[in-house]
Length: 299
Image 1 (cartoon, one colour):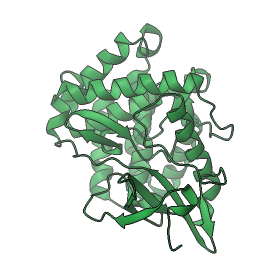
Image 2: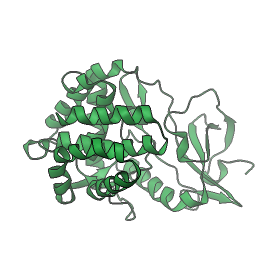
Image 3: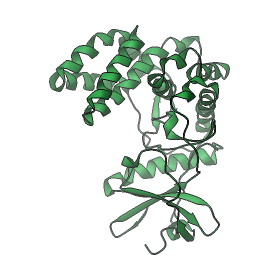
Image 4: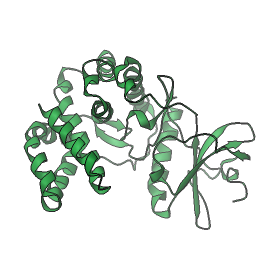
């Protein structure tokens, strides 16, 4: 495409290789920051054909949330034809808003309350906006219970040493996983953690990488964010970002006596996906760290 922004009703001015791109580069074929003729910045991603159906759904969801008033979303822009992917020959591209930011100082941020407060506000705002958004009907419905069962069966056959350490922890997660299919459901970002956000100091500007957005149990994003902060510094649960996030969610009514009892096992269950990812990458150091962390959470 001579002007990659034309399908979106914009005019390309220049690439911006000077701007670092946060988030995971693995979720598309390539990506770059571009600037249009008005000086606005966008993230332009090239997609594989196999991604198109799901990415249409993801983009429709972020756009719907933005229309419903969620300001902290890096929303996708529609094409002039109403879709969210522009295709020509074998090239498929998608456009979303881009805001430059500065990564949080790791792991020091875990002992600051502000990031936890910001993540708590985001989860609350997401819940409020999702309730009035015109969400696409094709959003996936995620089940941790099914995932955990499949993973344990796979590990028993392919990774017996990992399975032998994980199996005793099933008791700490068991009641939660049994209850999970019947817990209240909510729209969740699906991969919420501090690195999947753009930050201005300790203020959350926008959540990014919505690849796993969908319906899940109501603690899914809470547990995911807490789990990622805790593995960097477990002290965050007592003082710092983790504790502040819990307080913010209690103050807003998203955490209460009914669901707080599930929070610790939900954090543990949320780490199973990370364990599987380290195994897929054959990162044995991170596999050991993840198992150590799960054992700590089970105490």
